[in-house]
Image (cartoon, rainbow, N blue to C red; front, side, top):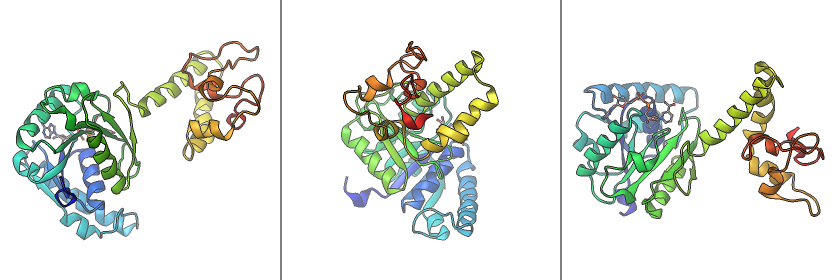
Length: 290
Ligand SMILES: NC(=O)c1ccc[n+]([C@@H]2O[C@H](COP(=O)([O-])OP(=O)(O)OC[C@H]3O[C@@H](n4cnc5c(N)ncnc54)[C@H](O)[C@@H]3O)[C@@H](O)[C@H]2O)c1
């Protein structure tokens, strides 16, 4: 597919995430066709998006190089799936988070598009091998999981099906980069993807500390909002560890992060617990984690 063919994106489902994706894609200069199976819903979405684009422009928060009017002109609403898919090189599905609904939507889409059209799902927690199990050509399928609201939170997790072609992930990565998102690649599918796994570890350890009577609910929230959260808005855990590199022959990397954390050197939380990157008995393990 030449780059001149890569101008139209179809968004399936005109709810919260479908609208937000449409705004992100038009901000990057793509033509976007929104489809919803509820008649009239996609037209309503176009009107609503038009209002939001104007408000963002007024507040000087509009993304991209085009004006609100120019961006709105790139958008159209459709009640017919075949019409909405006409000319698209990339399809972003945003329907209800129900496996059977998504499977049926992708079955219908595959009948109507060419072999090289990328089929991408916004699913939050269904793995690609389930979402795309009824698609014949799964090499063009992947999950592009946004974080709500995608217009403001730029992370997109790109999660391949075991059969996804590397070039398809590359296409999604360059599209997301071009429209100003921050894509990350997962090498393989896993429950929770990356963001929700990290989030689950933080939540689990927070619960444990509260349950064990170590800290109050209010204070564990402050640990994040006034401490770790501030840092992690700028640098990730790996960069934090890198900046606190060990001296001499101290173990580095995962070995160091997995070292015991208790005052007597006893084992810390579960092997993959977030607390392991915290300051340990030597006091110098992760200096900036205090
Ligand atoms: N809301 C979030 O915070 C969030 C964040 C990341 C990912 N997601 C994922 O994005 C997807 C959409 O979520 P949402 O919050 O926008 O849902 P939503 O309920 O706001 O919108 C879903 C839309 O899909 C339409 N729809 C349902 N079945 C359809 C079909 N067969 N064909 C066409 N359209 C159909 C509905 O009419 C509705 O307009 C879900 O998979 C969700 O897990 C949501």
